[in-house]
Image 1 (cartoon, rainbow, N blue to C red):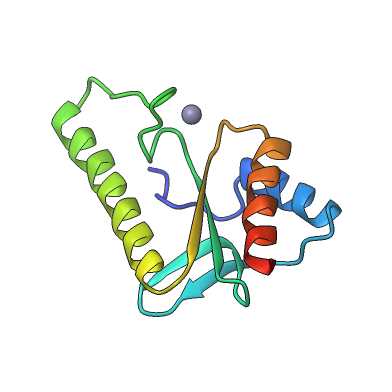
Image 2: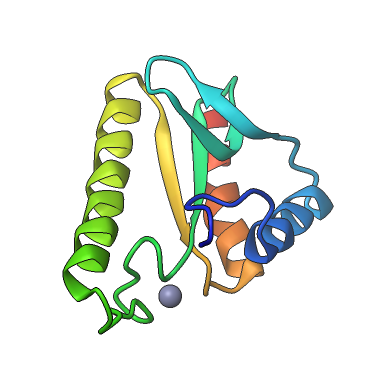
Amino acid sequence: MQRQRQRDTMPELALRSVLHRDGLRYRVHYPLLGVRRRADIAFPRLRVAVFCDGCFWHGCPEHGTWPKQNAAWWRQKIEANKARDEDTNARLKDAGWRVVRIWAHEDPVEAANRVAAEVSRRRA
Ligand SMILES: [Zn+2]
């Protein structure tokens, strides 16, 4: 069984390398105080948190699949992850953070552009 939030997945590494190439400096696996969760990528001073969500585990509307074996168990599991993501978003928002969620299937360059846009909005 896979762990739910894997560290350093391929899409995450690809995104990080594009951000780095664009001159952005960030922290990885950054512990978010009060939320008891870690951002995959964070810009703590600007309060921008980035999460790379796996299509399967986070129920991507395009590629999420619902296994037929143990269907109820999987549905409950994936729905719980989605609820947790929403909860994380809400808590971070309350704490003054901006949240960027990236799907694992997204093009790393486009994903990096979304992150960079949020970062420069914060800098402005
Ligand atoms: Zn997807």
